[in-house]
Length: 396
Image 1 (cartoon, rainbow, N blue to C red):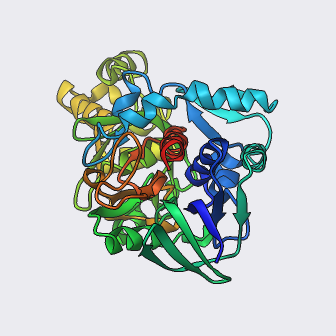
Image 2: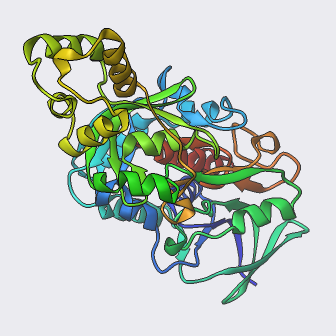
């Protein structure tokens, strides 16, 4: 029966990084994945350009951009494998990249360059990669673990679970990592879709359907959390970066607020319009600030007829309140089908923050999305994958 020092289940970002690190330490490493290709999420990320990290991921403010039942857990791994370290590997492989916005780094060329880089580093480190091979069972053995694969039986000293979460099942996502955690007595934090478009009930959709395809810059908030980026109206509800970000904080039954005029004094703009163009209808005034169809909808909702020059301060205040705090109540999300990440997962209370090892199961490690650590949109989740994979690969 073949024996390896380290077996890694999952050939995604975290799994490949863990394999590289373990292999570079001279460990015999096998990476096994049921998919046809390694790094499928890398390939499709960032619109095919791979937003492979964020330069702010390990800065003081970036540390607050990871969600978890214990948000401080991620800091140990993130502090020891920084964006600069991954960028150095990217440069070494001659991959050109650019900063898009908000510290987000994208490849100039196709995302497959990152896969090629990682696969090359794995080969150089002597790692064995086996694809289209499932894991049927895992059991504790006398000196490690015994795995039954769909093709063979193997044993290993250390087992790293890098199976990802439930997001995008068509890419091969399964619940295997959570099943293994429960099998070995680790607790789970309830999982739910994250970085996902939000949906509305039928009546609201009927009211908003004319806006499908329209984008607008906005500040979208839920409680004290707010994101200033684009939002996009869809035939199901709302999407766009601002909505994906707030979805990780939103819970069913909650409302969100939308500021359609970020950093503008809407009251002052309206008062100026009342003075400068008093004969215009409200929708016409709003169309000077917003996409025409959105202006029409807001005007209809406010149901304020007449020329803006005749509007009292009270009426203008109603318009201002809608522009700066349009309240919308989603009924759900598009779910794991389109979610970029999975919130929740393996409870960090049962893991060592420095090594990602299970506290009570020697030789067992969990890395990446399967763990209850989820970053903001914009490269944070890849940085968590690199950092957690690095931590486990250095220890396993």
